[in-house]
Amino acid sequence: MQVVAHRGASHEIAEHTTDAYAEAIRIGADGLECDVRLTADGHLVCVHDRDLRRTAASRGIISAMTLEELNAFDLASWKDPWRDLDDEAPVLDPDRGKVLTLRKLLQMVADADRRVELAIETKHPTRYGGLVERRVAHLLAEFGWTGPESPVRVMSFSFTALQRMQKLTPGLQLVQLIDKAHHWPMLRRIVDPSWIMGPGIGELRDHPGLGKHLNLHHRRIHVWTVNTQAELELCQSLGVEAVISDRPGYIMDLLRR
Image (tube, rainbow, N blue to C red; front, side, top):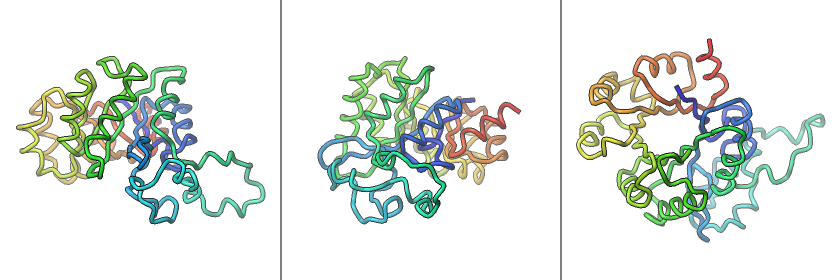
Protein backbone atom coordinates (compact mmCIF):
# COMPACT_ATOMS: atom_id res chain seq x y z
CA MET A 1 0.00 0.00 0.00
CA GLN A 2 1.30 3.42 -0.97
CA VAL A 3 1.42 6.10 1.73
CA VAL A 4 0.90 9.63 0.42
CA ALA A 5 1.63 12.70 2.55
CA HIS A 6 -1.47 14.91 2.64
CA ARG A 7 -0.27 18.46 1.95
CA GLY A 8 3.10 17.18 3.14
CA ALA A 9 3.71 15.97 6.68
CA SER A 10 0.92 18.33 7.68
CA HIS A 11 0.13 16.93 11.13
CA GLU A 12 3.44 18.21 12.46
CA ILE A 13 4.35 21.00 9.99
CA ALA A 14 2.29 23.72 8.33
CA GLU A 15 0.60 22.30 5.23
CA HIS A 16 1.76 23.07 1.70
CA THR A 17 5.15 24.39 2.83
CA THR A 18 8.54 23.27 1.59
CA ASP A 19 9.31 22.09 5.14
CA ALA A 20 6.23 19.83 5.19
CA TYR A 21 7.11 18.24 1.85
CA ALA A 22 10.82 17.95 2.62
CA GLU A 23 9.95 16.12 5.85
CA ALA A 24 7.59 13.76 4.01
CA ILE A 25 10.34 12.91 1.53
CA ARG A 26 12.89 12.49 4.33
CA ILE A 27 10.80 9.98 6.28
CA GLY A 28 10.19 7.89 3.17
CA ALA A 29 6.63 8.70 2.09
CA ASP A 30 5.83 7.05 -1.23
CA GLY A 31 4.04 10.12 -2.50
CA LEU A 32 2.99 13.67 -1.80
CA GLU A 33 -0.42 15.32 -2.21
CA CYS A 34 -1.15 18.95 -2.95
CA ASP A 35 -4.06 21.21 -3.85
CA VAL A 36 -3.56 23.78 -6.60
CA ARG A 37 -5.19 27.10 -7.35
CA LEU A 38 -4.46 29.74 -9.97
CA THR A 39 -3.42 33.27 -8.99
CA ALA A 40 -4.61 36.41 -10.75
CA ASP A 41 -1.33 36.55 -12.70
CA GLY A 42 -1.45 32.91 -13.80
CA HIS A 43 0.74 31.06 -11.28
CA LEU A 44 -0.25 27.67 -9.91
CA VAL A 45 0.12 27.71 -6.13
CA CYS A 46 -0.31 24.98 -3.54
CA VAL A 47 -3.16 26.22 -1.37
CA HIS A 48 -6.26 24.36 -0.19
CA ASP A 49 -8.67 27.14 0.78
CA ARG A 50 -10.02 29.75 -1.62
CA ASP A 51 -8.93 32.50 0.80
CA LEU A 52 -6.29 33.17 3.47
CA ARG A 53 -8.52 33.35 6.54
CA ARG A 54 -7.39 30.08 8.09
CA THR A 55 -3.69 30.20 7.23
CA ALA A 56 -2.89 33.91 7.32
CA ALA A 57 -5.84 35.60 9.09
CA SER A 58 -6.65 37.55 5.92
CA ARG A 59 -9.73 37.75 3.72
CA GLY A 60 -7.56 37.78 0.61
CA ILE A 61 -8.88 35.48 -2.13
CA ILE A 62 -6.22 33.43 -3.91
CA SER A 63 -7.67 33.84 -7.41
CA ALA A 64 -7.83 37.63 -7.02
CA MET A 65 -4.23 38.03 -5.83
CA THR A 66 -0.90 37.99 -7.65
CA LEU A 67 1.96 35.76 -6.61
CA GLU A 68 3.83 38.82 -5.34
CA GLU A 69 0.86 39.81 -3.19
CA LEU A 70 0.60 36.27 -1.78
CA ASN A 71 4.29 36.29 -0.93
CA ALA A 72 3.67 39.15 1.49
CA PHE A 73 1.90 36.69 3.82
CA ASP A 74 3.33 34.12 6.22
CA LEU A 75 1.41 30.88 5.63
CA ALA A 76 3.29 28.82 8.21
CA SER A 77 3.07 30.67 11.53
CA TRP A 78 -0.58 29.70 12.17
CA LYS A 79 0.61 26.15 12.88
CA ASP A 80 2.86 27.33 15.73
CA PRO A 81 1.51 30.71 16.88
CA TRP A 82 3.59 30.82 20.07
CA ARG A 83 6.94 30.25 18.38
CA ASP A 84 7.99 33.91 18.60
CA LEU A 85 7.76 33.70 22.40
CA ASP A 86 10.22 30.78 22.56
CA ASP A 87 13.70 32.24 23.05
CA GLU A 88 15.29 28.83 22.46
CA ALA A 89 13.56 28.11 19.15
CA PRO A 90 16.01 27.96 16.21
CA VAL A 91 16.02 30.85 13.73
CA LEU A 92 14.06 29.87 10.63
CA ASP A 93 14.42 30.92 7.01
CA PRO A 94 12.00 33.85 6.50
CA ASP A 95 10.98 32.36 3.14
CA ARG A 96 9.71 29.13 4.70
CA GLY A 97 6.21 30.53 5.15
CA LYS A 98 5.81 31.91 1.65
CA VAL A 99 3.29 30.39 -0.71
CA LEU A 100 4.63 27.31 -2.50
CA THR A 101 4.28 27.23 -6.28
CA LEU A 102 3.50 23.97 -8.04
CA ARG A 103 6.63 24.46 -10.15
CA LYS A 104 8.79 24.46 -7.03
CA LEU A 105 7.07 21.36 -5.67
CA LEU A 106 7.56 19.54 -8.98
CA GLN A 107 11.24 20.45 -8.81
CA MET A 108 11.46 19.00 -5.29
CA VAL A 109 10.02 15.74 -6.64
CA ALA A 110 12.44 15.79 -9.58
CA ASP A 111 15.41 16.40 -7.26
CA ALA A 112 14.52 13.61 -4.81
CA ASP A 113 17.05 10.76 -4.65
CA ARG A 114 14.31 8.19 -5.25
CA ARG A 115 10.97 7.99 -7.03
CA VAL A 116 8.42 10.10 -5.22
CA GLU A 117 4.93 10.35 -6.67
CA LEU A 118 2.74 13.43 -6.57
CA ALA A 119 -1.05 13.59 -6.46
CA ILE A 120 -2.26 17.02 -7.61
CA GLU A 121 -5.81 18.03 -6.77
CA THR A 122 -7.29 20.80 -8.90
CA LYS A 123 -9.76 22.85 -6.86
CA HIS A 124 -13.18 23.71 -8.28
CA PRO A 125 -15.30 25.72 -8.70
CA THR A 126 -12.98 28.55 -9.66
CA ARG A 127 -13.32 31.73 -11.69
CA TYR A 128 -10.70 30.39 -14.12
CA GLY A 129 -12.48 27.13 -14.98
CA GLY A 130 -10.53 24.97 -17.44
CA LEU A 131 -7.52 27.28 -17.42
CA VAL A 132 -6.36 25.52 -14.25
CA GLU A 133 -6.10 22.15 -16.02
CA ARG A 134 -4.45 23.71 -19.07
CA ARG A 135 -1.80 25.31 -16.89
CA VAL A 136 -1.21 22.07 -15.00
CA ALA A 137 -0.84 20.14 -18.28
CA HIS A 138 1.57 22.74 -19.68
CA LEU A 139 3.74 22.66 -16.55
CA LEU A 140 3.83 18.86 -16.49
CA ALA A 141 4.88 18.88 -20.14
CA GLU A 142 7.88 21.06 -19.21
CA PHE A 143 9.01 18.30 -16.85
CA GLY A 144 8.23 15.56 -19.39
CA TRP A 145 5.61 14.14 -17.03
CA THR A 146 2.48 13.74 -19.13
CA GLY A 147 2.75 10.06 -20.05
CA PRO A 148 1.97 6.78 -18.30
CA GLU A 149 5.40 6.67 -16.61
CA SER A 150 4.86 10.07 -14.98
CA PRO A 151 5.20 10.20 -11.18
CA VAL A 152 2.23 12.60 -11.20
CA ARG A 153 -1.49 11.89 -11.10
CA VAL A 154 -4.28 14.46 -11.10
CA MET A 155 -7.31 14.30 -8.80
CA SER A 156 -10.51 16.29 -8.58
CA PHE A 157 -14.04 16.17 -7.26
CA SER A 158 -15.00 17.70 -10.61
CA PHE A 159 -15.74 15.10 -13.28
CA THR A 160 -15.54 17.83 -15.94
CA ALA A 161 -12.07 18.88 -14.76
CA LEU A 162 -10.82 15.30 -15.09
CA GLN A 163 -12.34 15.03 -18.56
CA ARG A 164 -10.31 18.10 -19.52
CA MET A 165 -7.13 16.54 -18.13
CA GLN A 166 -7.80 13.33 -20.02
CA LYS A 167 -7.94 15.27 -23.30
CA LEU A 168 -4.86 17.33 -22.47
CA THR A 169 -2.72 14.48 -21.10
CA PRO A 170 -4.21 11.16 -22.30
CA GLY A 171 -1.51 9.05 -20.63
CA LEU A 172 -1.77 10.54 -17.15
CA GLN A 173 -3.39 8.71 -14.23
CA LEU A 174 -6.59 10.37 -13.00
CA VAL A 175 -8.44 10.06 -9.70
CA GLN A 176 -12.15 10.82 -9.32
CA LEU A 177 -12.58 12.00 -5.75
CA ILE A 178 -15.82 11.11 -3.97
CA ASP A 179 -17.16 13.01 -0.97
CA LYS A 180 -20.67 11.49 -0.97
CA ALA A 181 -21.33 7.75 -1.16
CA HIS A 182 -24.63 8.29 -2.98
CA HIS A 183 -22.74 9.80 -5.93
CA TRP A 184 -21.30 6.40 -6.80
CA PRO A 185 -24.28 5.01 -8.79
CA MET A 186 -24.07 8.01 -11.15
CA LEU A 187 -20.28 8.04 -11.32
CA ARG A 188 -20.21 4.31 -12.09
CA ARG A 189 -22.00 5.00 -15.37
CA ILE A 190 -19.86 7.89 -16.59
CA VAL A 191 -16.36 7.55 -15.14
CA ASP A 192 -13.74 6.02 -17.44
CA PRO A 193 -12.84 2.47 -16.29
CA SER A 194 -9.16 3.46 -16.21
CA TRP A 195 -9.71 6.19 -13.62
CA ILE A 196 -8.93 5.54 -9.98
CA MET A 197 -11.70 6.15 -7.45
CA GLY A 198 -10.90 8.35 -4.45
CA PRO A 199 -13.47 8.10 -1.67
CA GLY A 200 -13.07 9.79 1.70
CA ILE A 201 -12.45 7.51 4.65
CA GLY A 202 -15.60 8.80 6.36
CA GLU A 203 -17.78 7.68 3.47
CA LEU A 204 -16.17 4.23 3.45
CA ARG A 205 -16.68 3.92 7.21
CA ASP A 206 -20.24 5.23 7.34
CA HIS A 207 -21.44 3.55 4.14
CA PRO A 208 -19.89 0.04 4.00
CA GLY A 209 -21.68 -0.68 0.72
CA LEU A 210 -19.52 1.86 -1.09
CA GLY A 211 -16.31 -0.11 -0.64
CA LYS A 212 -18.08 -3.36 -1.53
CA HIS A 213 -19.44 -1.88 -4.76
CA LEU A 214 -16.07 -0.40 -5.72
CA ASN A 215 -14.53 -3.86 -5.29
CA LEU A 216 -17.39 -5.51 -7.14
CA HIS A 217 -16.68 -3.28 -10.13
CA HIS A 218 -12.92 -3.91 -9.87
CA ARG A 219 -12.10 -0.28 -9.24
CA ARG A 220 -8.67 0.83 -8.06
CA ILE A 221 -9.08 2.81 -4.83
CA HIS A 222 -7.10 5.66 -3.26
CA VAL A 223 -8.49 6.95 0.06
CA TRP A 224 -8.28 10.28 1.90
CA THR A 225 -7.58 11.18 4.73
CA VAL A 226 -6.39 8.12 6.70
CA ASN A 227 -4.89 8.97 10.10
CA THR A 228 -5.70 6.12 12.51
CA GLN A 229 -5.05 2.41 12.83
CA ALA A 230 -8.76 1.58 12.49
CA GLU A 231 -9.00 3.62 9.29
CA LEU A 232 -5.91 1.93 7.89
CA GLU A 233 -7.27 -1.52 8.69
CA LEU A 234 -10.52 -0.71 6.89
CA CYS A 235 -8.52 0.32 3.82
CA GLN A 236 -6.48 -2.88 3.98
CA SER A 237 -9.66 -4.96 4.10
CA LEU A 238 -10.81 -3.29 0.87
CA GLY A 239 -7.54 -3.75 -1.00
CA VAL A 240 -6.91 -0.01 -1.19
CA GLU A 241 -3.84 0.87 -3.29
CA ALA A 242 -2.94 4.19 -1.65
CA VAL A 243 -3.85 6.09 1.51
CA ILE A 244 -3.45 9.84 1.80
CA SER A 245 -2.52 10.82 5.36
CA ASP A 246 -1.67 13.87 7.45
CA ARG A 247 0.55 11.47 9.45
CA PRO A 248 2.54 9.55 6.83
CA GLY A 249 5.27 8.52 9.28
CA TYR A 250 2.77 7.04 11.72
CA ILE A 251 0.87 5.18 8.98
CA MET A 252 4.10 3.77 7.53
CA ASP A 253 5.08 2.62 11.01
CA LEU A 254 1.74 0.81 11.39
CA LEU A 255 2.23 -0.91 8.05
CA ARG A 256 5.75 -2.01 9.02
CA ARG A 257 4.39 -3.50 12.23
